[in-house]
Image (cartoon, rainbow, N blue to C red; front, side):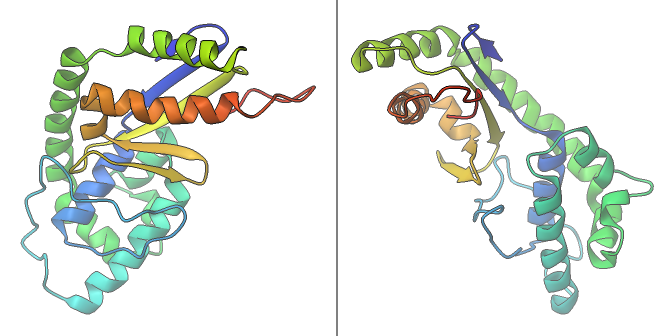
Length: 211
């Protein structure tokens, strides 16, 4: 997290979303998209398919719909979301028998894969630090606008999916780890959000919010 008193940028890769995305890819689910669930690319590194992947199409269709329900209830992740998808009880999968069956079969693989994804994230953060660049970018945008940007806290969800992409999920920014690894691309994306924030005057009594 980068915080400068008036503003802060917090990039997180929630464990609950990693496990769920691995389950999606390993089981080859095709959950329906929605404002809370964009069409997210496959994971990088890729998930190894479960033995039952592509088997019972009716069951997989039901599991895909259940997966979308879990995502809508759990995004943007957090402690409760993680607990909801973990064994032995899988409390967040109550009433979702097809998805729970896949979770029982594939959760160990998902946890192992997530450790690999964390290692990739660690290498990205070490190779492309951005804290100083973010501070300089805020100052640069404020100079161009001729005034300070209103205070903000920007919480960004980072997902290890293929490509360099970004989405806006009901006001919550989501970026791929590939975009975070591309410093120029990440800063160009951040600049757009900062300019948009700076172009909106802050009214009296307005609360600090996401840009």
